Amino acid sequence: MLTIKTPAEYINAPDIIGDSGKYIKKYGSKAVIIGSRTSLKVVSDAFYNGLKENGIEFEAVEFSGYPTKEIINLYSRKAAGFTADIIIAIGGGKVHDIAKAVGTKTKHPVISIPTIAATCASWAACSIIYKEDGDFDTVFLNEWPPRLIIADTRIIATAPSRYMNAGI
Image (cartoon, rainbow, N blue to C red):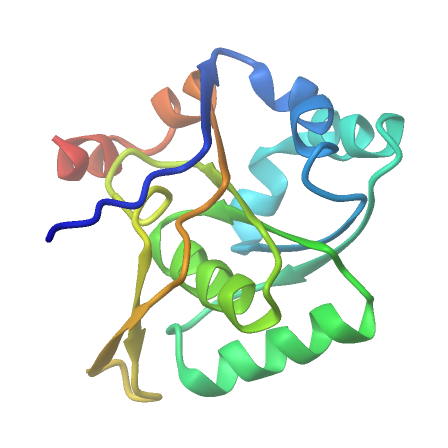
């Protein structure tokens, strides 16, 4: 039998990033945010202020490189140390792969905020894991896909065109 796991909610609209907190708060109140340097800037103060206005505490962790087992373990420890109850991914595929694996390891729901159109990682229930040198290692099957996807269409539309083209 084939089982397809899908997110519980998908919301997309231009400039929805500022309202993200009101959607995220039903999943938790203490978040570890995993994002690339660029993506953490792209969501702007509107996102962070929206979290604060909705009573969501957060700690942002900048990710670069490859999703590896070691990084999953490191970020899982960070989430535990912060006593997070949700994981938020902001960025492209590698960021989402790490966040989903951390969510599975810590048993916390994952909120997905894609910033490019070139990936299905913000939706899928699996994570692609690499070795330190960037070679493929394994496919990590997550128990669940992200529970909530918030796609700000203005952010996605203003990403570099190579990411839009890759998504098509």
